[in-house]
Length: 423
Ligand code: AMP
Ligand code: GLY
Image 1: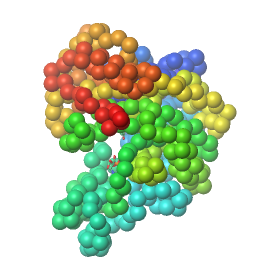
Image 2: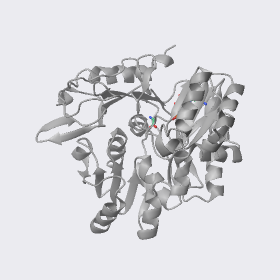
Image 3: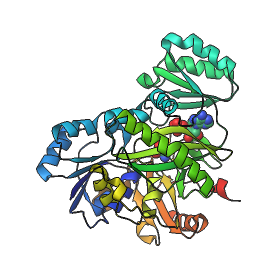
């Protein structure tokens, strides 16, 4: 089987690492990839949204299976493009219609209410209903949760304590295009006070397999302070997710969501990443994503013992229920090394050293490139340092021991990943 994987982050390096272990793999290509994927697969210089160049490459190389890492090409319809043009190609990633679960927060909320998936109460507004939105905010208790409807690079959610500020932001989103087209509609929802975790599901649109759960750390600063980032670290499994909570997540969230996907008739073969808020041991959905998380993939993949490529093939053939997904009992943790200044402006092209000084860990490259014999930083998030252990403390100690050894100018990482789990 020849596989093409789209993307260039730590998520894609972790997926490539896992796919690479399959006995069914003949050759793996990553487009565009990074200096990490380059060590284990063949990088191809094609952008994730360049369907035309991808098609040409797929035809020339005789690719059998396409795995879509990030959300943008899915929301843009990459799956539909290839289903129409190359019906034999297996695609891991939903159709454009299914990708609306991530592409439109309003659509996702309607879907959840239709299929009785627990979520925060909400209303949505556009420019013509701005005044109603302003009044609606007055009727709510703080904090106020405002969500731009469309994709806004993870920045479209605002949580505000002050009513006047919330009203000003609503106006900025709807009237002044604060997030461009993405905020032409805004969902205002009830604030849920709880603890977050993520559930990952692989589905063929009818059946599903629940992958290891994970918790990520989105803020740049220790103690979960400062600006939001793509994710600064993650742990798997989530230590507070007891059997009772896992059962509720499966019954109330996963089964109802997959039932909805099946009833809507989406051509959906791929991941569903469900962001959850746990309030008094009850799960509520705060968002759907139609891809894996980053850096969650860097802790989820190392805990899967069975053959991911075989699960993908079964998924694409609508036979996922036959698969035996095996998950390791161990914990996995990852600590993200980022460029100084991230998530605001930062410098790239810093030489990374010490990679060969690490031991007993997995290094997943996020934003790196190779130039001659050197590995240089090439993004805000640079390298995810993953380790496994009997419990998350052992794993974290190994992640940190190795994180210290990797050096580049301006390197920063949070030293408190998992801080809220220590009891
Ligand atoms: P999202 O982009 O939807 O993941 O939202 C970004 C972050 O906002 C989430 O990770 C949560 O921390 C927070 N959030 C989203 N919705 C709510 C809500 N209804 N109540 C409290 N926090 C929320
Ligand atoms: N780590 C959060 C995300 O991938 O959306």
